Image (cartoon, rainbow, N blue to C red; front, side):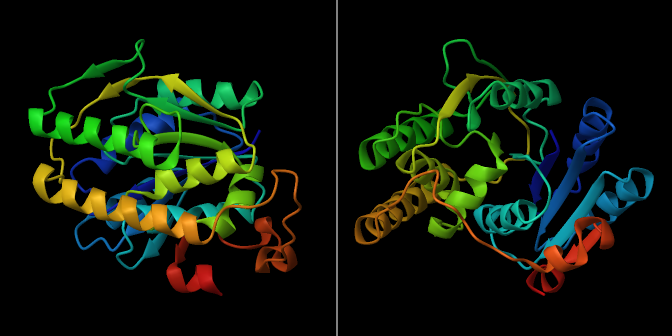
Length: 272
């Protein structure tokens, strides 16, 4: 199966280099593309990615204005789904998910699941590194609230490692509205309503230094974003089945994926 792996990155010059080295070494040389979704970077992240791309033809990037993690993932997923990928995945650029854990998710989807998501809260998971008490409480409260508001059974919607079939991505994309950290909840909620099977998989998670999360302000943002997404789905509920046909014709259909340069794109190229 052909895999497109997306790494959302906003000013990750301190961590993206080792992450790309790790994934380049672990992923198979054929049938894999690694896309770095540059989210309004103003540091040296893009230069590091370009250096890796010059050494490895599997690596490309798309430069976006600052859209937030959910925004660049949504746009990158749509771009990948218009290509020839069978599986579409993402991991955080900080390297918190070792490549072996991504491979575990891939095997789960290859075995028949429509999507596999890593869970740090699974009884068999291992978390390395120390998260502050405030972050742990915020995370636990958010997970509880999501289960109550959206009725999803998952213990950890926010873990930054997920693998999905391209069919799932194409089917759910028209329903998605969230461009912030509720993107994960949006896609999982929509996928379940359309009848796709999502499997939660235990993982090894290595908490990384340099987190930009602030427990107090982020808790308020999580609350309001959750309520906004809940209201959106109440007003415009997800309707249909997973088997409904998504008809599309993209510029790629005319040019052919092999007929365009996959190594470098800006948001203007994606829109064209």
